[in-house]
Amino acid sequence: MNNRLKILRAQRDWSQGDLADRLEVSRQSVNAIETGRYDPSLPLAFRIAELFDLPIEEVFESPSRRKSGAI
Amino acid sequence: MQRELYAVAHYRSPAIRRYMIRLIVMVSLYLVTLFGAVLTFKAHAVSGVPAVMLAILPALPIIGVFWAVMRYLIEEQDEFMRMLLVRQCLVATGFCLTIMTVWEFLQNFDIVPPGNDGFGTAFFWFMGLGVGGLYNKLTVGTAGCA
Image (cartoon, rainbow over all chains, first blue to last red):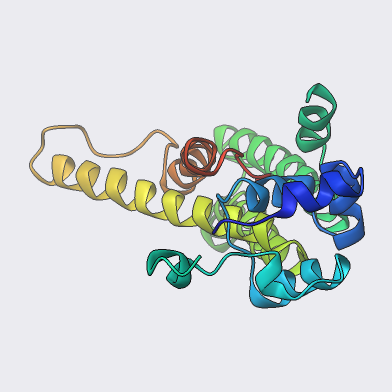
């Protein structure tokens, strides 16, 4: 699933480790989510969105909307 | 980048720490009970029910390793790390069942001799965990911890 995690992280000058610490997950998790190799669960996706103080759809791109060309 | 790779390789949650301690304890117990059993049987120092119990004794720490792996799955708070281990366990189970099934048929038709010289189900399951780690590395970029 595409997301804006890397951009949002860079805007705050956070490393993957900084974000991992804030989310209380491993750096592997952040890396896998950021590179689209792992789709987080809904609770973790909400935690990420809340950390950046954004609605979830502004962090993660809906695969179905992307498929239909809406995004 | 190098700093990130270093940190990735050194991720240690409390659950991983507990898992590693349990693993070290179980492997140590396995070595002690295995050598104890081998020496005792070589000396013909035991028979009957005690012999059965002594023969089973080295299996208990191996069962303990299975328990440690499953406890780690329950205790790990990081969902991605849990997923990596679940995938490893599934690959390990498939790998082990495949090897043992083929081996048994080869034995049934007398293509290979009976017995396994200690390379039994647990050995191939643990080997399968390694194969699962490689599968994780190739598909999601990181092997996992087990």
